[in-house]
Image 1: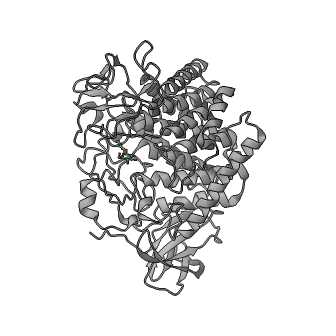
Image 2 (image 1 turned 45 degrees about the vertical axis):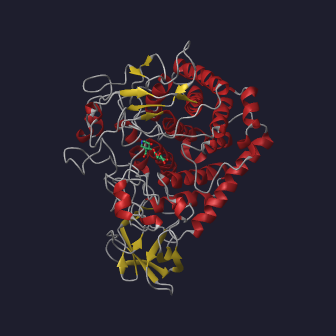
Image 3 (image 1 turned 180 degrees about the horizontal axis):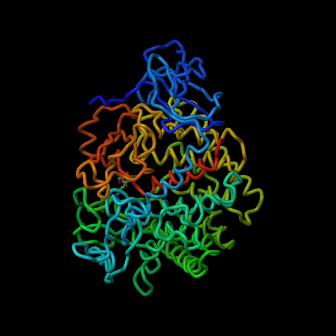
Length: 576
Ligand code: 9MR
């Protein structure tokens, strides 16, 4: 299988910020440096220079050269880059490049909502649908859901929240990191100089039904999930009270497409887990500090849940989800919850200032450990979430501690910058096969978030440029010449695996909305479609924009939450 990858000059198909870095990659057989030309929409040569030969790039298997045209600052649309007889896809140079990405990336969450009708007047009639999983036939949930056999003797109302990804499951550990990243997107606007106080993320910036209620829309969106996460807590008086059920999903896997309201499967609560409980504690602790000025009663409720969940996790520190519990939904298993404990203690400390939480986080191995792996962080390794908040959220941390914690962020950012310079395609991730895994695009973004946070902390332009340049890879500067964000770039992913967005299989079903991030290349080829089609692929080629390939081409809330965070950062950079 040889995909059509179009012109051999690979650019960020969305474009470049006028004063930002501008890099491209040429696939070529030439080993001597190639001349390049930047052309305006009218075809005039506006800049030219010589590429740098990079040899064979291990991640793609291609002989490549890189082009740096950062010195050209003039805004315009329809630029192309020409080298080796090839003309790139067109792109813009503009300070407004990412303004709309901020809301597009967040829009995904509204369309993924469970338990509420999606309003076509807000997001387009193709996305309008009745509420899913409110107990209306043929649905069998989520208002009165029993446990799996033998797990509990009660039923819970666990309506609401977001569908996790292309399936109809709802998982507390993945809801946790996604909620964290939305809340962090908002909190950053209060702490980072370049966010200008956050006016761009207010009430009426998103197309959500709550717009105009006096509360920033991103908090309304995050609350939709927080209310669900809180419902997953084991009620007082029951065994393991205060813990959170790990997940709720269908008894059996369903086919696709399948609109949520048409899902006939029985829904089941799966056992509580320590990891889920700590995700609940961490996000409700964030909630308690961020909603206080908008809805004091809700903030207080969150604070109570955070404390009870954290206490329950400490009393039950090793109840782990089973790796084999993966029928009808994903396992999201994890046997090391030291990072979840660190993250939850950090959030509780930042919210309450209480010494007991500081003592717990100080005693954690992650307190002084390096929490920034080269392959980024994700739902299973969340220590970085705590570390980033300890570095950025105002607190009573002793000065020396804060200095050390902030230095750990810039040290990691320095490593990601070095990696990005090593990579011929400019991404802040290593080029070995193991660095291309299920959902890895979000880990690329998460490393960009560390770079962006280093910029927020220091004001050093090199970190901002690194974060900006990392996005080039996602928007088309890659071996497939493909943007992984729907609606963004000439050649973009649009057939992501999803039961809701099934256009490839049923023309009456929509494609994912603009701003939806695909999981990305995965060398493990963990679905039958990809393993048959892509066997033997070089890492960057282990991806296909086909709805059947769930292990390379799914949408997911934890991937779009990373995109939403970095999109908001990018939008704030204006003509950076
Ligand atoms: O994102 C998850 C990835 O890290 C795991 O390797 C993979 C297999 O367990 O599962 C991914 O999460 C999926 C979940 O299990 C079910 N809903 C869809 C998620 C995205 O593909």
